[in-house]
Amino acid sequence: MNLQDLTASEKILLAEELWDSVASDEQLFPLTDDQKAELDARLASYSIDPDAGDSWENVKNRISNQ
Image (cartoon, rainbow, N blue to C red; front, side, top):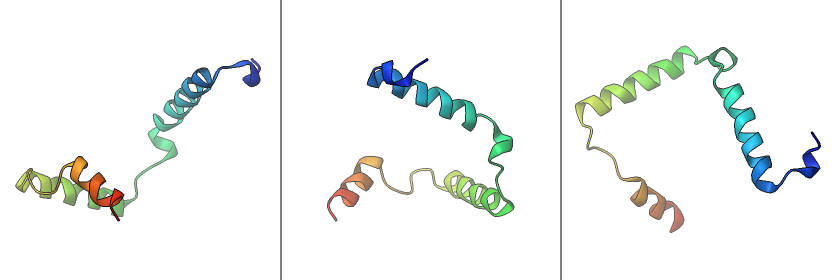
């Protein structure tokens, strides 16, 4: 396969497939104990108050308006 012969869409699809094949292998990117603890803390916080925080739309607007 010659990459130069692929369309932009085909190249994007190929890149996505390559990324998915790497990202699906959890052994390549193991979480540290600190990362696991942070995820557990965030999940516990969400369980206590799932309505806390802000919508993605509001967050995106704040970022864009800075």
